[in-house]
Length: 198
Image (cartoon, rainbow, N blue to C red):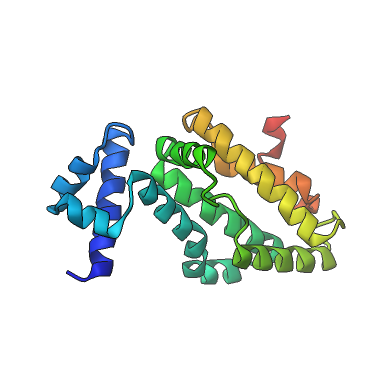
């Protein structure tokens, strides 16, 4: 097995165990046993259980690359922007609030850069905001980069609240509602369920 595929197997197996048993109840021995590897092999590929979380989260924004056609297939710039952020939400919902919360815990102990702004995502989002402003889909005319940062921080806040509430609300709906209000999206582009939150 190649070095890359061994690492991927460890990560995939660990995430399966984390989802089934919980992060705290899964040991490195459990991961090694499920993979059929030694601890030496585990530590050759990864430094710790926390490193598994950081490895996964770094791939989240990279997953946008695989959805670029979904982004471009949307009829307008606003929907393209929504797909970018929904892709990130779907990735963290997939791992669940317990594991997502570990990202916050890990970064509170030591800033691992997990919540730093990704340059590629920032450039793409700022460009989409700028274009949506020009055609009137986004009515908030604040500088695109400032709008992006304001929303990105709100996004992290919703992620933290979702972890605290153990996944007890629909993050995609809340995300979209916040986007529509922060960006002041044209009423024709707003979600039909917007009124249920007021």
